[in-house]
Amino acid sequence: MHRTTSRQAVELRQHVPDPPTGVARLRWWGPGLLWAMSAVGSGSVLFTPRVGSEYGYELLWLLWGVAVLMWVMIREAGRFAVATGRTLLDGFSTLPGPRNWALWVVLLPQLVAAVAGVGGLSALVGSAFASVLPGGLILWSLLLLLITTTVVVSGGYPAVSRVALVLALVLVAITVVAAAWVFQADGDPLAGVVPGVPSDLSVPFILPWVGTILAGSMGIVWFSYWTARRGYGGGMTSTEGQADTGSPESAEGRTARLRSWFGTLSNTAAVGVLTGTVIITAFLVLGAELLAPAGIVPSGIDVADDLMLLLSEVWGTVGHWLMFTAIVVALGGSVLANQDGWSRAFADITMLLSGRAGRNAAAGGGEKADISWTERVTRWRPESMGTARALKILFAVTFTSLIPALVIVVVQDPVVVMSASGIVASVHTPFIVLTTLAVNRRIPDALRPSRFSIGLLGFAGLFYAAFAVLYFLNMLGLIGG
Image 1: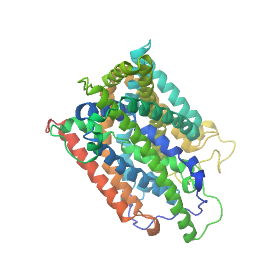
Image 2: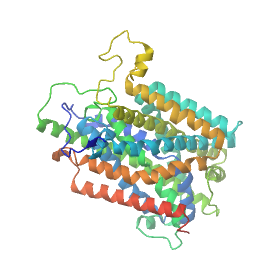
Image 3: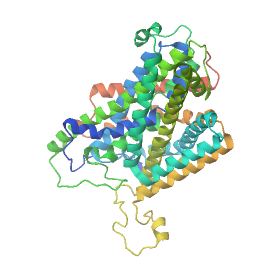
Image 4: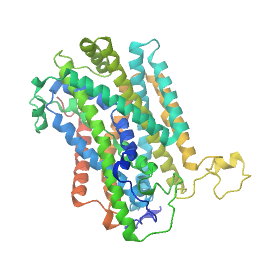
């Protein structure tokens, strides 16, 4: 068995462009907003209003505390790619032990999570459409998958990022306006900022919510891909087929520029987390102000129907359709971002496991022009497209489109479908966090995380490890309400 034993620091990228300054930084916030759209799916729409209905604002501190941890986690997930020009999962392959062991730990369960996650989210959107428009759940679910898959396959990162930007702005506007309109100070929301445990707290009730606040396990990884694809630090030099340009600089010059890039990275991570947190907080307000007074603690997809009904009592038909739009945008945006994120990650892992990563992935790069189509596919270089892009399309069409569509047709229950994805996320989040910490300790000392960041990242890993234990104890029926 091949083993990776080197514990030496990973080399920095050879060329680092000037980082953006001033208002130019605004143009680099796309990865944060795309990440926000991937993060506000089922957890926001299904679980947050339920928690607001049951506990009001008493757990607001937990929501915001997890958001802070998430900011640290996604920021640190992007550090390795910015510093080295290699993907975070490429960094996983450098860890000591059996060769590529961490990649296998990620790949196999995440294939299941991708099918279940995309299938479940699509079915939720389908159920929302079916509740107000002609046509059943299956029809609308499959139509959504067709649209989002087309965007991911045909447009690449720029198209996905632009769509996510529009969706994020629409979602923020709708949810914030709705929450502000129904908000009443009687619930004493400021009391929820101070950590405390409700006297009637049900651990099983809040577990699904805690596990879906903002991103799941792979959402942490996706942020590193989207920042690298945008060009942070100079872009990726491995599976995306992008390479550093220019003459090598001194280590001091590169380090100084990279530190500035880390500042942009940190700000973009903050934009993503803040956007997602504002949206989720708005859903908590809607639960506390609309569901709680009515004595409603809905389950599953009933959350969407109940919120639409209650907001229509406030705003009439306009409220009904605004809430419908917010729910569809939240879930549909998550489908789009999840398809892009999972297909990128699977393509990268496949390249790394095959030993192709790091080579020129441009179409025809270094190969004979008269090579046949069959041989190109066999040798992983499809005609007129890079290897990584071809693999991304393959995974986008199969594991985030066709197979989820089949699952929707067979199962037709969004909550049941998504349960498998939740199980994988609960186990993988502490693994991804602690492995990211190990990878970042391999980059040169001057660019490693500070002790404070290391401490927060370590705490986040332990927090989610404790959550995973509680999650499985609850599944086994060993803890109750």
